[in-house]
Structures are given as C-alpha cells and as structure tokens.
Image 1: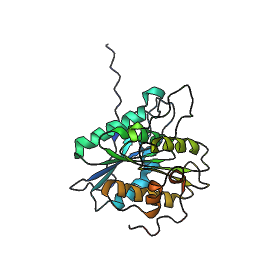
Image 2: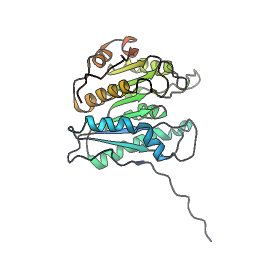
Image 3: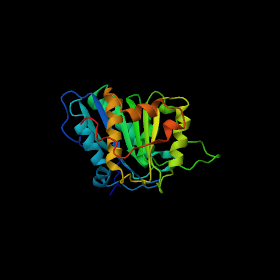
Image 4: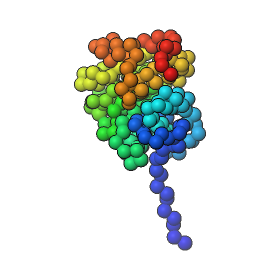
Length: 253
C-alpha cells in the first residue's frame, strides 16, 4: 500500500465577528498569542478567546463604518526562528482580505507573539496600521540582526505595554519604537503603569485606546487628545505615554 501524502497545513480566517456589511470599507485582523518554538497546531477556541473581547468591541464601534473583524488561525503555535510562521500567516491573511473584500485598508492587531507578527507583516500593501499589545520581541544581541522596522514606514503604529510585564520586556518594545520613529513619525507607544503581560488590570482603558486608534487609522475618525499628543511628541515622550486610568469613559460609542 502506498504512503499517503502528509496534508499541507494552511492558515485560515475565522468567521467574521458579527455580521458582514454589504459594503466593506475596512478590516481588522486579530493575531493571537503564540509560542517561541512549537510545531503543534493552535487551539482555535483558545486563540479566539484571547482576542475575542477586543474584537467584539471593535465590531460594535465600526458597525456604521463597514468594518469586518476576523481572527487569524495560524498553521503552527510557534514563531519558529527564521521561519517566522506567525508573520507568514499574517501576510497570507492580508492577501486573503484583498481576495475577499478588494482594496480596503487593513489594521493588524496582535497580542504578545501576535504583536510581533503584526509588526513584522506591516509591509503588506493592504496594511495601513498596526496595533501591538505587549508584543513579544527577542532579546537584542549584537551578533544577530535587530528586529526590522523598515516595513513600518507609512503605517500608523500603536504599541501598548504594561510596565510590570514579566513575560515580554517592555524596554524592548520601547527600543523598537524608538528606532522606527526615526523614519516614521506616525508611531506612538503607551505604557500601562503596574499592569502585567495580559493587560488585565486596565483592560477597559486598553480596549478603549485600541478602539480610538483603530477607528481613527481605518476610517479617519479624530484621534483622542492623548493619542494625538503621543503621535506628535518627540521621543521619548511619545513613546512612554502613560495610559490614564479611566481613559475612554467619554469616547463616542
């Protein structure tokens, strides 16, 4: 009996969170966390749960704007070194958005290792903005090329990091933002004082900040004053902007 070929793994988009509008004018791709090294398949329900609450908030906020939100389901749990599987899958997902919805702007929203994938895949022509929540970034090593930032040129970028994050060093996301800011002024970074990797302590404020940024980047809504100030401020001020307690209570819903 001949051997059966091993099935080729493929990434896929989860079902749209909420109804798909008749006229789609913007897409958010949610990139869940992953592992540094793993050839195992991700659990779709776990992945969706990690970003689902934020995704549903964005769906409500963009209901009148023609927004569609999808979770990206990776082929593998791991980044896997130079293979950068999660970044490849984010790039594939942006291609799939173009195939399904045409020429619409895409915002990549990633958490932890998904944040790294969002930052790395920002060079896709459909991507106009990136939101990286507590992005996992490799330790800087003079013998290894630093994490690239050229692909962030021409994109609006927001990084959010808790100051007490014990899994992903917030200083590394600051350094990446500082390098990127030299060539792209549309980058800002907010620090969530005393919060950890999951950004649970100030989840409401973080989600409100995400909504403010995504709606502005995709649909041209006016950014809140703190986001405007962070984008306009020179380093390091605009890259160490504190996220105020209660942020978002007065935002439009």
